Length: 407
Image (cartoon, rainbow, N blue to C red; front, side):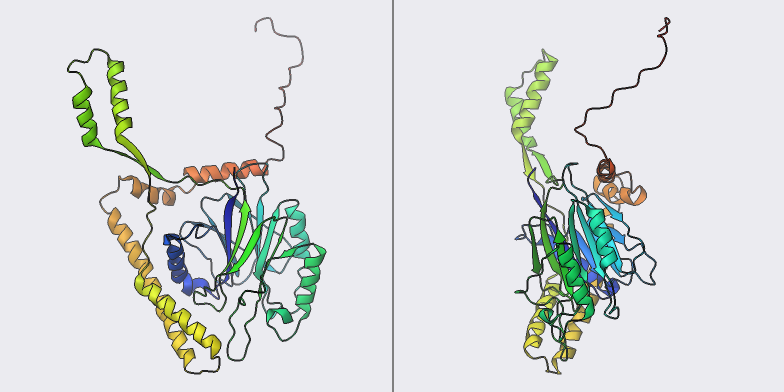
């Protein structure tokens, strides 16, 4: 099977609770983009969430250690088989998710999402790095997050102890840094602070990976980062629909069918041939909500103000003009998500027996009864199996003693 593209998006949301609707509308815009050649969302790594983060169509994994508020979450698309791991005896807030490939012989991908507060000046990543390298083995590793480690090359005024220790660990474990210094910084500063790059991405055993700063802020001072990795995944089948031209079918039946049916098998074969001639298979379009033009206009206006502010950092009149569109975008996105949900419920009203309604309601009542859930569980069982599927089955043990004359 050819290698498919997996996109991991990293973002420090700065309390995602107020930005959930904004992020959901942005994901819908990326999905509805006709020029997009890649899927909009496969894996989303979030930091500083302050609450349990979720998105429609994704499986959410949150940090398992006991903290007052969760700071890391990883969202995985429903079509990707995945499972969560846990590292004990570490104070570093993290989330570990393993993306399982479609073949048992292919290498899986472990995504480690880390957040370290700026107040944790003496944070030591040696234990979590050591345990993670031992857990990965020969599989692929993607380690990303907001480390808040200061370095001169990342826009800070000096290099702190945390950054030096982190750099030594990257060298000792032979990790590869994916951040591109030619691209803009990942965090927008203010009138007294420079633009910095506190978000880091390193990998191990990954042959082809690219890192890109999208520049999308979504109400946060951190940009959304996109990491593209080539790996063997279960290929998603494209939806298709069979359309039959029934007037043409009836016309063929009237022209070629005889008045008397002499052989039932011949008559059924002729009907099947007529159906095959008059039926064409077309690719079904994905039912996605359209992007609101007013929201797109507000996004463009906010991006224009941010570009102007990057050239005029000491302009005091620009700061309130930037804050106003952010609050307006959040309120408008929340109203749009509620409106789209109401429209969906209204469209399903009176159609309780339709296929579309049950496709929406069945996972709510029976989350583990769907075919996709069973397939992901099967992938997980095969992945945990220590043996190999290529090995011959073990012969059955023969019973001791003499054979029974009755049998």
